[in-house]
Image (cartoon, rainbow, N blue to C red):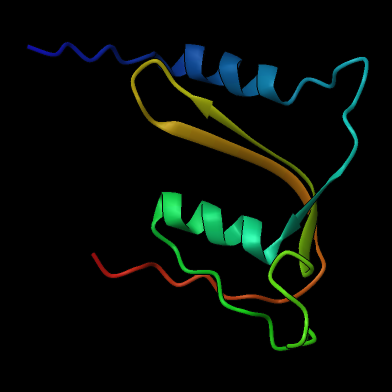
Amino acid sequence: MRIIRFIGFRQSLRLIASMNTPTSRSPARIRFTLADFGRMGERYGFRYDMPDTCDKRLSPEQICLMEGFIQEYTLPSGPVLITSDVIARHRYTAPQRQL
């Protein structure tokens, strides 16, 4: 038998507030390429399509879609929170995959 522990509303707010607390040393901004988004899409069930504004001769590893920070936090009860602070460099689409 599996027991799932849910966290309370106040505890959730404290967790979210702690995620947004600036640290004394901010990490460098990260480039997220079309290939990176392809890997994230596999994990979460989305398909990220090639932006129309990109040079089609470039590989997915060369096309920078976003720059910034993306962090994942797994809550004790199981759900995953994703926070981001990014700048989008190109338009893209992300339709959900059919299961």
